[in-house]
Length: 315
Image 1 (spheres, one colour):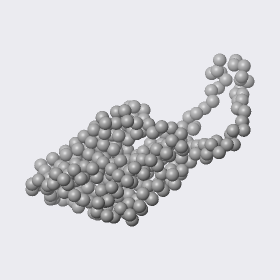
Image 2 (cartoon, rainbow, N blue to C red):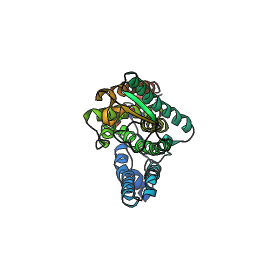
Image 3 (cartoon, rainbow, N blue to C red):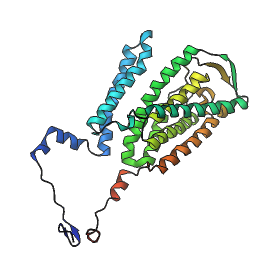
Image 4 (cartoon, rainbow, N blue to C red):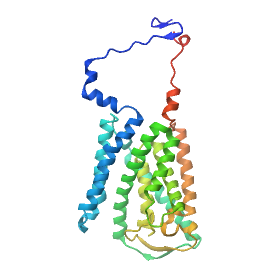
């Protein structure tokens, strides 16, 4: 028997408490320990700077020459707040945003987004529901390419990098997937043409984006997917994106037919065609995430699985 063990019980020797444990750094470390504590600390430390950036952009960036800088400004503020939160509260490096391999994953995601929307447009065109009337605007397409990359970074950092990831540490992958999907849909509830059906379709997109994050445990694939998804609709095929169309795309086009097929005023992402293709992509990402062992249990289930070895197992 090991000399530090008594029969039937484990002798635990507590470490000596040094005077440094009462230092401000130690107290801060204790206050930020645990997934629940980190989740609530994220609200003031990341959420508040982002809200203030939105207020500043809407109140003081109203001149026409400043409108194009709104999203870049908010993106920079959010990136800095997120990096500071990860460094000082989670006490780690931002591995989910590491640069090695970023270009490849971003391009793959962009390709997936273009592919899903392109396939949905092709199917809609075969049914007679999508008609191209001519060329649109190259300048408009470039504007949307720039606009949607910032939208993708902002939303993926908030919903996947922060909300989903921190919730996952508490309620596990399934629970965080459900909650973040509901909140993603609600965040788009004020968009023109939004209703229960369109928000359900956005929920499907949220699941796909989240599973892309779970599969890689990095942000680049889901950012690229979101970027390509939005740009393909508005910038390439000239369709509304979540009910909005801020600039003409590369093609001047229109849709006709039942709302369930075309997506109506909300856009193609509310079409049953897009929903079916998204479901297939979700299955691919989800299966690959399971294969890689990236699915996580709730914190209470993980705690129950930790047990002390019995004396008979210790030699």
